[in-house]
Image 1 (tube, helix red, strand yellow):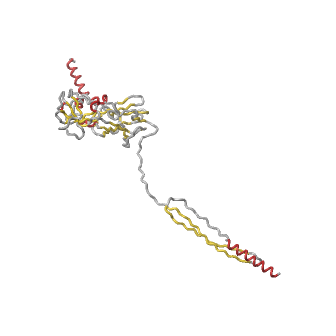
Image 2 (cartoon, helix red, strand yellow):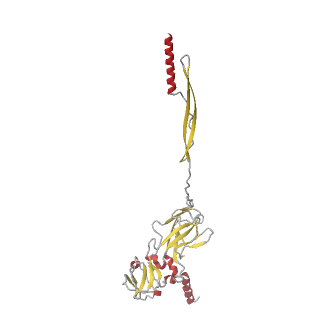
Image 3 (tube, helix red, strand yellow):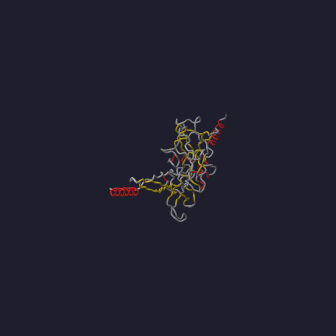
Length: 340
């Protein structure tokens, strides 16, 4: 093959391998740029080499007030949103002295969640066995999708297995493969859906480390902060695959308390005792006792308690019966003495 043809093929291969690189760096007038991005082409904002960009204080009059911050542009086709110059200075920046909106500077934010595809719940760091998993990316980087020819901010999801090997793609339950590299995030809450059949035999049991980052226009290289351009930090997300704990989330039922009324019987016992006394000629008093017992119950609202049966009262001669018996004996004694 001629040398020229080989060179042409190499150039075409390079273009195919990086089809959105130029577009990802092209910022439209009034577009959003992120701290840490470099090599941006901001020529569409009508900024020229040697001119300046200006920021005005909150509530200031852009057309009249003096700028609170100024940045000189050396090359509008290769602009660096330097953390040293732009951190803490987010917001609208204008051409100067033209005072026309050039772009909006934002500090990037990114967060990753691992979602149980069966329950739709965030598993956090937990154990999973057999449930399909997916990813949820929460970020403001979706604003890159407004750049011409850009499908979304390229976010890479990292999954590292217990041996330290890192996956570039994952298989779902049907065997379909999903790439984890340069996932085009184009909404503030982006979901991949279930893409990972997380369990043996496809994936070995053990602890997996999961994180995500975005290095669009080398922003992570220049501004490598957890929660900004990467989700990886010392705590991270650790998932136990094939753990004995089973599925990390199985759903929980919500119990609605129901008020119920119960009654506690209060037993009141009453007894009626009738005493009949008979004096005999020999001086012996015989007391005969009869009686009836009654039991009543009164229902009182409250906690349920076991039913209680009141004992049947047993009638016995009272103090009055004993007194009458002694008096009768005394009278018989006096009568006997008189006869003597």
